[in-house]
Image (tube, rainbow, N blue to C red; front, side, top):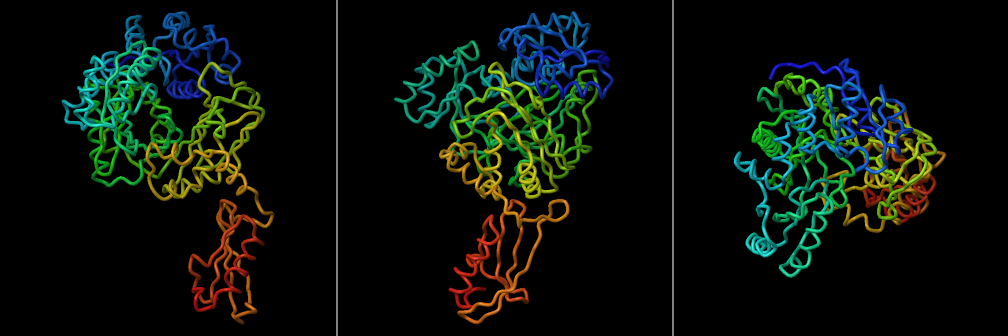
Amino acid sequence: MGSTNIKKVLIANRGEIALRVQRAAKKLGIKSVCIASDADKNSMFARNAEELKLIGGLTPQDSYLNFEKVIQAAKETGCDAVHPGYGFLSENADFAARVVKEGMIFIGPTAEAIRTLGSKTGARAAVTKRNVPTTPGSKGGLADAELIKEAERIQFPVIIKAVAGGGGRGMRVVNSTLEMKEILPRARAEAKKNFSSDDVYIEKYIIQPRHVEVQIFGDSHGNVVHFGTRDCSTQRRHQKLIEEAPAPYLSDKLRSEIHAAAVSAAQSVGYSNAGTAEFLVSGDSFYFLEMNTRIQVEHPVSEEITGTDLVALQFEVAMGGNVPRQEDIRFCGHAIEFRIYAEDPENNFAPSIGKVSTIKRFSESFVREDYGFESGDEVTPYYDAMLSKLIIKGATREEAILNSIRAFKVYKVEGLKTTIPFHKWLLLNKTFQESCIDIGYIEREFKDAKKLLSEVAAREIVDPLFRTGPEGLEILEFYKYRSQKFEAEYVLEVLHRNDGVFVVTPTDGSGKRAKNKNCRASNGLKTALRTVMTDVLENVPPGQVY
């Protein structure tokens, strides 16, 4: 395939990804056209479009999912390429083929690759030929009795999935033959409703796995490279809430094996352009889950650790360019992406519809924000309610978490409920801070949401005596104290931790520090000092303090 210059691109999407694609096109000197439904005609991406084409309709089916409207908009505005973003028509093989048939460039993989990998069973068959590990499972097209027989062969629990499915919809975990008989008709009905096909298959259900994915990229010259791992285990009902790169707590050997498997999976279909190979990881084992044939919502974290503009690379590859050599892709630091949704985490993440009255953003060198809403914008019931993606960087994962805590002390969205309180809870969760969590962790641990979030809110009350150093650095203060009961002298070290908590550690003044059980922490300085004095220094003999 030779090189073909793109002069003008139709962005077949909305919200923050429409703006993101527009920025990449502008960077490359490519003109762009945004389309907008009736519900979106006054939204931020429409207001900021280089050129806007109204296509009418309110629902996705009447607007961004309508083939004819999108194709007609591209032709009427003189576009020679279409970028589908993510969601909507981005993984629709028929749409990709139609764009090419109309003489335009589809900025994504070929229709054939989308069709093969869009079928879960087709993808499993393709990658298995390249020795990519997959979970035991069935093929598609089986009757209920055959599926039950397969489930009994590979042993319960199993998960029922729609062959044409995606985005976590329609998945059902079953633990017995009786349960499977009851659930299969419902799973087929759900698959039919969401994907226009009632074909389902089963896989062995891996208990408490992590969700680790790899950003891959291919070109039309047969080259495929990876841009590292991402961990997307923080999810609820198979919907991702945060993502981070690189995936933490993987051995070098396991990480290399996952990278190789992702590249091999892409090579199995001659893959070109951006894609993501998703895996379940359990211990030192991993299993291919699926391939997403598009740019992902979470692509910014991979961009931040590699210094690569992946959306611009999509354009370059679509014009016949090469992907970089694998040895030229460098990895540096850690990045976490927080999806800010207009949802109420206290009320089972119910949608929150209405006007965004105020957004107070946080600006620092370690912060990137890709957003599609500004103060005064309306969140409608017709489309995905993601307001923004807040991407926080650090030299290490620990630093990225601390930077994130700082950012969420300032970042605010007012006027409706958002997922910001959930993110604050997660950042203060010691399990998340210190180890890897599995894909079921949030549903297990975030059940009493109202209580958990009220505790977070209470911790956010900042004592007027709390101080930070330059660039938000934590500071230490020292107080002298004499125990009246034991006539002992202490120097109390007070750490102003950057989450607003005071940690008081008794010392003997020469560097000898108290045992952890004899330290105290509170978001009130006087409370922290008083409890150390009464609970420890006036109650525990000096020889037992250290």
